[in-house]
Image (cartoon, rainbow, N blue to C red):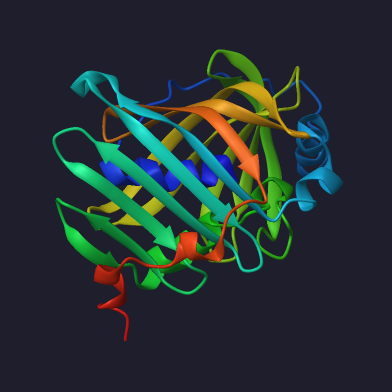
Length: 253
């Protein structure tokens, strides 16, 4: 869930990471994609522990090293229905908010003003808000396939193609040694067109009964940003946290 919310944050600044092509290992027998995903689920704490939570609230920092930008980021997520909100405070710009309340997806920025997402942007955001995305529920991700054993972020990983119900495809990487997810490559629609976002995940730490990646490095359009998680708590988020701001409500018909 944290990465899916962080993906939304990345598109606020339109950051592309040109991952160096890695050499595949065709001789190795490849495990089934569901087996790889289930190993990650077990490594972070198990399916029962994941499903035992209904919301999360995380705080951290977002930095763009090339621009010397550093500011706080706050993430909210919930299930039934899936919802999420990302709030970022950018020095010299102000507060930027992205959200999905279960029906409407929006962004609010001093640079662009209030905007509603429609069409493919809306459907992609709805899937990105999947609170239990780590489970890769076949109802939302009907086809998963192991492509190869390769190198990603300097470590041996299994490369898994994930087809979503909206027809888009993500590529996930899982660490061969630990089973934990190492990152992903995602293609998303944005006001600037189609963007490819590469994320690497690391520094897993335990919050409650689950492990979470606390450092996510994202690159898109030649810009790198780093999200560092410093706190996370479960099941204390009020429904009001996902209410659209007044400027967005004015756009909803």
